[in-house]
Length: 67
Image (cartoon, rainbow, N blue to C red; front, side):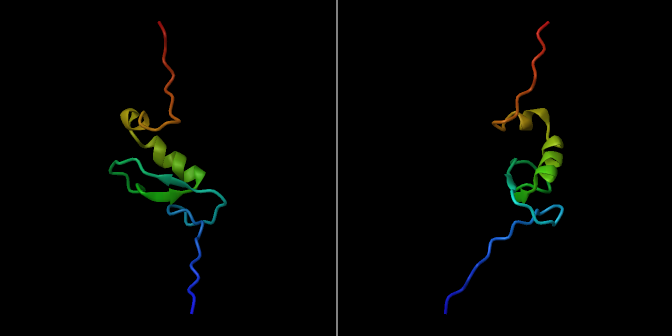
């Protein structure tokens, strides 16, 4: 007997199905840390991080003001 395991594409936060999910691992005390989130929920969780925590992500580029 073979067991078939299906991978679901449901966002852990909004509980809806999406084509693409992102793994949110901020190593913080976020409620949604280590979960797969859709793009909208990922953005919301990311925006709740501190600037220092955001700086650890490769895609975050804080604009620097030159005086």
